[in-house]
Image (spheres, rainbow, N blue to C red):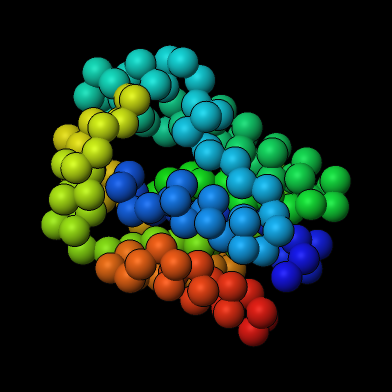
Length: 171
């Protein structure tokens, strides 16, 4: 599959759902570029999360604009990117679409206990597992008018990538 045949994508969901793993594997599978949205956070956001304080909308807005710009730039260059980004609220997804309207969201969702177990087994530079509850409380479901593919994270990353690739081919 050629990246020019695919839209720009955001692999979204709460921390620990597998955004980076799935996003990177999907990009390799379809010949696209992967960008980890965590790498685009300003230092102030990373410091706030490392201190165990959740980000608010004011913290997220410039970060989301940076991600939106990256989506748009990648599309303009003819090689739409796949970016891992929580995109928890509809308003965040709307902001990303304002930068790049063709964006498709790949929503990785799953049971809170499964995701908590994954978080407890890993160490993250600045995202403590204690922030999962805050993220789950912030998460707003994909709405019918949003271009999205929803996948349950109880499956293997390989199976998730195969499902997403099939859904993209069926569009």
